[in-house]
Amino acid sequence: MWNFILNGIFWVLALYGLFEIIKNIIYICTYTNLKSNGIYVIIATKNQENRIEGFLRTLLFRIMYGKEDCVKQVIVTDLNSTDDTMKILNKLSKDYDNIKVTNWKECKEVIDSIKEAS
Image (cartoon, rainbow, N blue to C red; front, top):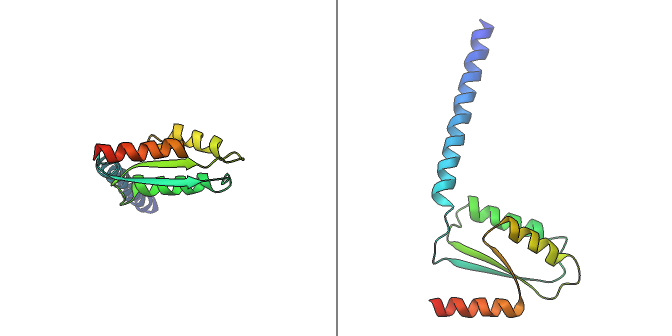
């Protein structure tokens, strides 16, 4: 009798887990495509090696899995940091396609090119 009850509970939990996995895959495939005319997030940073990685990962998590599906690209501008901020930013830009790391002059050029494309 106990074996039957434990097997029943196991199969209910397994089917629920399978349902949740399928639901998340459908959600990710449907809602994480960034739109071509979206919002550009520009972040200026200087000497923030202790905070920048957590901040960007939190922001990207919200963009990828949250309701902020209109964000096209995150542009991070370094203002001549003297610590390892640029090293961390370059590592994150390799991990995520929608992060672009620039200096202030390149950021201005990106902004101007967005204006021209509109």
